Amino acid sequence: MAEKSIHKQFYGYLWAFILVALSGCLGNVVDGIIVGNLISEDGVSAITLSKPINQFIFTLHLLINAGAGMLVAYAIGKKNLVEARRFFTRALTLSTGVGVLLAIVGGLLFPTQTTRLLCDNEHLMPLAQDYMQVLLIGNPAFIVMWGLSTMVGVNGNPKLVSVAVIIDNAVNLLLDIVFIKYFDWGITGSSSATVVGHFVGIAILLTHWCKPENRRLRLQFGGGGLLASWKRIVSQGAPLALASICLTLLLFSANKIVLSTTGRVGMFVFALCMNLLQVYNLFLSGTCQTLQSLGATQVGKGDANGVKTVIDKGLRFITIAMVATCAIVWVYPQGIALLFGCKDPAMLAESPHALRVFALSFIPFCYIYVLMIIYKLYSHHRMALFISFALSLTVIPVLWIMSKLAPGAIWYSYLIAYAIEAALIFLLHRLNHIKFELKTKN
Image (cartoon, rainbow, N blue to C red):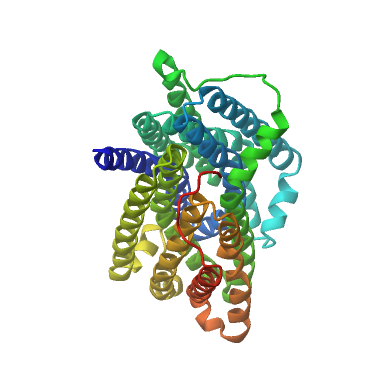
């Protein structure tokens, strides 16, 4: 009976979180598709050059809301509503404050300087800055949207999260075309549409608290221990955030290396590969957030079988999703380039091989990322931290070496790096005699 209940909860959470992930995935992928078709291939490259900023904002969300979501889930599992409310309140205030600070510094005071950190190509820089500045100014909506989605899901209302994200993305899709084609805002219209969509999503999520029974998780100020609470929130979110900040460094480094090694053609092809990664992340994010929310609740209850059931279902789902995605890319890779408005013969010729290699590369990436969550659930914090650092940082030296020794095989860099990391994880796991057993304390 308990397993049947977990089965129902798992898929309720999973599809809700996958739809939440669409808020980030479609916000980037659809922007690229529309920009490629309505503006140019260089517009797609400019968006990819801006991805380190996207990833940095996402890192802030993970550091604050993912960690707080786990703490709230633990507290709800132990029926400690006072603690759950305290972490919810402090996560929301911290998210808003950090988002506003980033908007002021990066979006209003130093937009040009921020853009130059990511793009030194004078031809692409104007497009990158136009896109990035709006993204930075609107980033508080991004962080709060993800944060509220996490908390509403933990509070037992994943269906509302689904509705909010569906409408968020519908608004984004509609306004992308309106702002670019009819308002003639260019690439700025793309990021503007994403921000407006997030505000609509926030408004819908706030209706969760209109029902009295949902107010068990509500704002509760005071109580002392503010810095201690923030420390616990950040500590819980650190493994995921570290993985994300390492990915930010990877995106930054990869853009530089690929642009200098393969030029304009390679930069567009790499942009296609990074958009493919967004599709993988759609399923990966949903799986990992389900493991965090539902798995952490089972940990709070001390239900070892429940934790194992959640993990087994998560691994089964991510395997099916990866195999299906990879198969589609291998069968029709050139269709992806055409979808993004590619008309350049050289770009069309280079895209199939690179996309097929990257489709394979992302499979070990997804498994390693899920494994990091599993280590965290079982309180193997050192292994989780190691994976957080290595997941992206392993790629940077491999990518650099390949660019120098075998530039024609540069697309294999990710696959080689993840194979190396998988071997290291296996070795460390065996050497440290790690076992996946539930502990009473975290």
